[in-house]
Length: 171
Image (cartoon, rainbow, N blue to C red; front, top):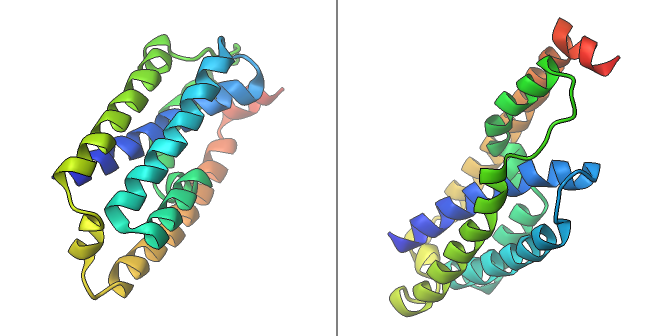
């Protein structure tokens, strides 16, 4: 159960990280050093957590997929659509939500604490043993979600760019 909670919090952290990365890339994120510190600490935390849950090879692969935002582009992008709609309707310069920005550091510390606790609660490779001998089913399900999620993202974003309010904000 603790493994599932950690994975869900990592997915939440990936979504928040992508949200804040937009502002950091635009150069409008205040105190960007703190964000970079916690973003790097978050990567290290989920790398160690995934290695403990899945083993060294599978854990590194899952961590790399999170790091390269493959997991985000497969399905977590849906949580960014409301923000994109509000940005398209209101052409002013957006600012990061202070609650989300401040909560990111707390979320990273919670994930780190749970990952350390997981070392004492769950055995090594406990999630890998849950998958069992049938590795191909989760791999094929993830590949299907990846393909369907990216196709849906491209279709929905192309439709959003054709909206009249989106054209106004680009001018």
